[in-house]
Image (spheres, rainbow, N blue to C red):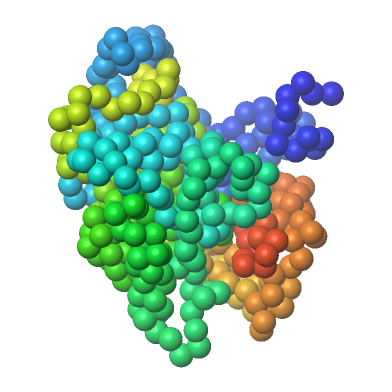
Length: 422
Ligand code: PLP
């Protein structure tokens, strides 16, 4: 009997008792290899001594100070660190407790920016089908996953969606990757024209699609073209790197590999590595300047810039840099991709193996040649997860959409500290 309203109303999961390195142990003493970092969170694995030490020290020094009264050295230092390594032109950061809050904040920053610069008529957000941007109402409205939106649809603000850049399903026979990337990006142009550029606030996209699609990296040139379209129409580009950011793909920010900088970027999971709940919204100097003229950013939460969360973020980021873990992400990511391809490349129910760095996924299909997904009612992803857990493995499967636009997939996002087993 439990008094917690769990995700699954009749929960069957084990009780986690302790964790170390890449493993979590339950109260029965059974060990699980954490091959997904939970939900791509635990980038340093578990119980890292440097992070634990930093958290103890912060707790002794200062656990909490409300940001309407004080700033703190730890929040300022983390902000300095993030801005130093941020994409071109990013100058300021707003700290939050997770990814959904970071997206909500990004949307409000974008809206207020246009009000401050005298374009208050802008109100539409364009995002992509099958995307995931979080579960709060603004984030859910932005996300394009039909199944997750359905129940709450009457409560969601008006957003518009275009098809994602999803080579496996949308590239046509004989079409080069580059030509496909351009065609996929041009869908944004068409949508902007339909809505009227003067009415659009922002285009929101995960740089590498994660939770609902499984490690879909953009085609070469896709985001360059998107950037160019946004600039031409004066629309903000918001990149959601909550899952794919902070080193997961082998560079600190996934968009580095696409050669562009967003106007606003959200980060979360790998920022604090699960040691504390923390997310952040980063923005360009021009946005800060517009707010500077207006006075205040009309937003705020009680736990913004929480010292314990910032201490976790700072410690995690220091370890990643000191131990040059992004090199390991590249190397181990390449190895993981090769091993998955060798092992499952010819499996009759594996349609695609894809990803960047230590962010890899397998898309499962009922039929390889037609790419037909399994019937969503079969809940294949839940069965894969249960089978893996029974064998002591944590991976992160997710269901296909009921409309058959994508299949079930299994996401792997192991900690950056993993090494190879012969
Ligand atoms: N954005 C993306 C791309 C995500 O993958 C997630 C969570 O999986 C979120 C936003 C929401 O983050 P949170 O669950 O921390 O609210």
